[in-house]
Amino acid sequence: NEHVIVVGAGIAGIASAIRLAIKGYEVDVYEANSVPGGKLTEFTNSGFRFDAGPSLFTMPQYVDELFRLANKDPQDYFRYKKLDVVCQYFFEDSTILTAWSDPDKLAKEFELKTADTKQSIIRFLKKSSKIYTITHHVFLEKSLHKLSTYFTWSTIKSFLRFPDIDPFRTMNKANESDFQDSKTRRFFNRYATYNGSNPYSAPATLNIIPHLEQHFGAYFPENGMYSITSSLVRLAEELGVHFHYNAKVEEILLEDKKVKGIQMKDKSVYAPHVISNMDVWFTYNQLLKGVKKPDKILKQERSSSALIFYWGINKTFPLLDLHNIFFSEDYEKEFSAIWKHKTIYNDPTVYINITSKYCPTDAPIGTENWFVMINVPANIGQDWDVLIAEARNHIIEKLSRILKADIGSLIVSENVMDPRIIESNTFSYQGSIYGTSSNGKFAAFLRHPNFSSTIDGLYFVGGSVHPGGGIPLALLSAKIIDESFSTCK
Ligand code: FAD
Figure (cartoon, rainbow, N blue to C red):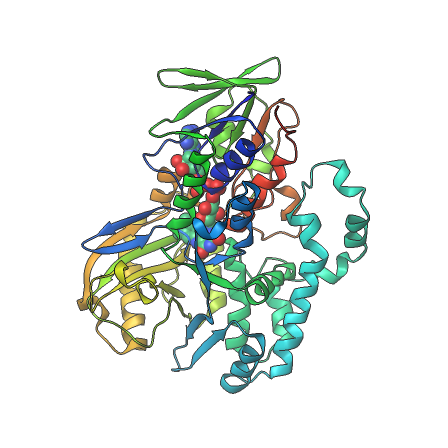
């Protein structure tokens, strides 16, 4: 059978391998780390289990689709449940707002806890749904880099309705005109961070994201986020995909503008198709020797990064849920610190994910596993050790104040992840967690395509290329390249 090589076992690399194995190709995945998953991995410390990266699971249908394509029942591999409460929001004035998955309950909650009305929330969600209807087919599920995409009726209809997707003002401007209360505006502005962007400069088109969460729902995989990786690797192996770990690819070999194979430290492997799941910036700068780089694309502003403290907490907090947000009092200043000054704000918005709420074995009895994350700038050589020490103090002060407990004294185990570690562990340029940012109006068109227009047999998948970062979009990148391969006899 024809041979395909995948560079990297991130979620998009694994999904690509599955899709091509189903089509009859012989697929080998070469992964630099000793485990699969890239950003989607897990670890344990002192009896606490942590998902290392993603914590919010949306659009599970894209994972299920892979099992169905292989004629398997997804339930035999991977189970998840829909959340009734998507997230608990905490404000400094003691307001606690529950983000119900039910839109009606959500709207009532806003009416009860903020100055905004139920109708204003319902109106907003309708607008969000409309943006999805206009854009999803063209901007998310198709290549924007093939002429055939533009010559379909659905694309033409989408472009005719372009002004309705609200691309000409920022997300914050739109939300300021829709809502009176700063709490409501912060709530909806925060969705820009779902792809590492800044609501004060990203187009209001990103108001599509609340629809994805509210309409399609948020889910919890029964055995934690890592089970997305482990169940897909199991499926891939059953389909005959070979995974090679501790196998860093050093070069993609080319001949006459065609892919010839890959070079590792001690061996070469030959194949006519190579799919790079490595960040596109590193693919050009490390793997493709003597190839002209798409400078304009590679210079795109990167998404934000993350600082995460993984704390074992020697107490349980009934007030907290699976997902919790502790808002900054001045959201605009926080984003200005991250994006303009490339630093960490002294009152950051703190996110806490506690999987032991749903999966009790993730923490010893009477304790909780806290994944405590703040948004930080991409790594451009800041003095991270100093910034991290300051941020740790600010986070502990904020949480102690709002939760009325001495959080510092409850920490019994600690691990830290910062932009430098994200960059070195997963080869994400500048430690960005979602590839490029969506801060510009035309960001969607400036992501790298899923295939090379100059080198035959070279493909790109994952969060750094079209259609963008986050698990659902990374999975869609694999779906887009799948369409370029015919069934192999
Ligand atoms: P990556 O995960 O980037 O993996 C790439 C893989 O390729 C790595 O394993 C790397 O080792 C390997 N590799 C690279 N170069 C080579 C080479 N030369 N040779 C061999 N192997 C190589 N998304 C969500 O949907 N929800 C969330 O809540 C969420 N939160 C996040 C929180 C954090 C802290 C982070 C870091 C990310 C988060 N994301 C979230 C984003 C999501 O994790 C990513 O968009 C997605 O996992 C990216 O997958 P990928 O396929 O691009 O590959």
